[in-house]
Length: 175
Image (cartoon, rainbow, N blue to C red; front, side, top):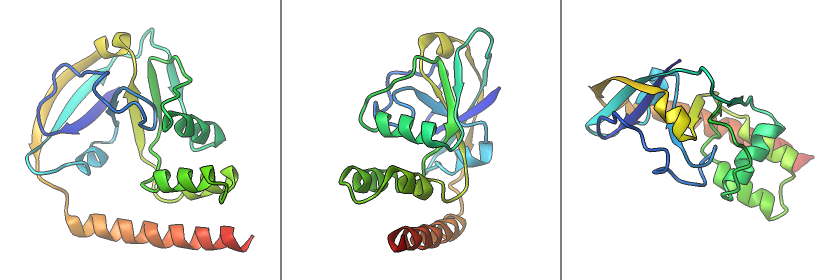
């Protein structure tokens, strides 16, 4: 599996312990199989690192946008990782997850409605390398310096997302 990680530098030896413990899939080294999506994270002087993951012998858990995925992210946002997989693959939660989970935790939003809100927008895949075993099977291929993505394209996508989110929230409030 070919994977990409954008950073401000070349990363030949990823550190699975460096990331946030309350990320979507818990602590780990995050990548994506979508190079174009990886470039979205580009800041000034960004570097896209390319790797190949040898999946042989690894315990890999794959999620789709589903109640199970939502619950796993909900738990991880509270630093309560419940999986023992070497690698976790699945959708990235949209940018409103903190607000959505906060509203749900306050009792103003039912879990099934929170899931509806998290389903809005395009689906991008993330891959979290969670164990040293998996990190050892992640082989660095190369790195390329890239330019920041066109801000107009990002703004247009964000505007479309905000509009869809507002429409769904209106439907939920009418229920």
